[in-house]
Image (cartoon, rainbow over all chains, first blue to last red; front, side):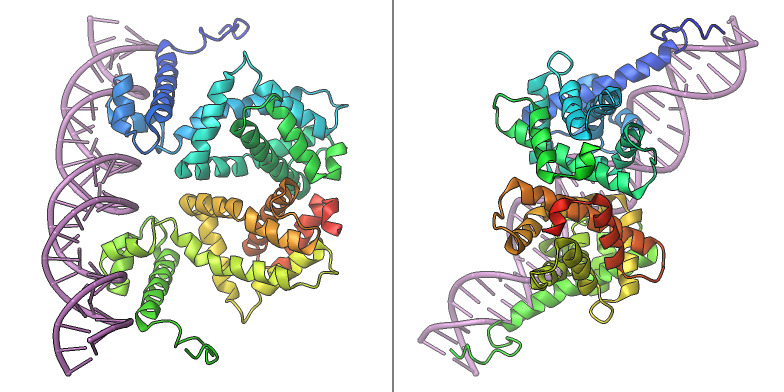
Length: 206
Length: 206
DNA sequence: CCGAGAGTGGCAGTTACTGTCATATGGCAT
DNA sequence: ATGCCATATGACAGTAACTGCCACTCTCGG
């Protein structure tokens, strides 16, 4: 069956499947809207479900827990960052590449800057979300390590790259949080670059 | 009144206060027992309260949430580690001092080794605990940064020390987890030392 | 056009967590 | 020793997160 014709893959994916994706998207967006408006605790699952006009039971068919919404809200940024880092020219140092990749992923036009700020503020002020987000970053170390390994030597499963990924992940979180907290001129990448430079990991220059 | 006589401070602290501390301790211990026995999810607050013969409502007067039990179970190790690190001779490099402090804090006789292993396994297998624990470590960066600052220069609030503390904290978690997973010969400090060496933070040699 | 499978809604039930009030218990001054 | 006060505790009701179950509907393939 024509695997050649898949420009945006509407033929390969069913109509119902797209509806599912759409519902998931709507739920996440509605949740974000409500969270930004009245806060996490003041928003119930019933509220979110009602906003999309599905039953509360259906919500749980898309998201395992309420906390997991934070993953849905932030995962596109993570995907973008990993892709951007992978696409960075290999001759750049890791220090430069990571900072630039953050800017690439959070570039205005690609994502809404004020939206990102709201998101970071939400994480900062919501313990449940912060814990889930930090853990998500912790888990994503493996994926980041794989990308790093692809740029330098080539041991995706090695302890060294895993630790470096962890340190970078933490520095990114710290840097972006700093950027989001104060509304100054430089982009988020600059903050991350500074944070990584402070760490002074010699391996970043490889 | 006689502040001189305070061998174990029974005069300074009231009898009721000690009873409170004791109840808290009993709750944490009973919870740990049940968690190790049947797992986190299979243990209800009612079970824990019943084991200590207090009402479920009382449990919440000692611990804000069920997840927070992990903090109670692990906080003595954290305190011990921070104290041990502070007590390490200043001429040691950070790399050496941190590894040694981990061994000091987790030394047999001081704490039960198999107990620590159970604890790490519990964290590894319980998402709710893992998230809470990682976040706890994330929050404790500030305290670790202060201890580090006390050893080297002296900027407890500086971004550099905060980032280093974050990296070290992550490396400790990774190292201790590695140690707990496999029951090999070397102590946990050795694993942490290796992890930190892999990171190759030049600042660790300061 | 029809049958199978997946998506959905409703409902009942468990459990974490909270506010409130009455009761009990220990600490302290008299 | 006694009585008062603060604080700890227990009982109860209530909210909200989450889950299992069953019936219904809708979509897709034949």
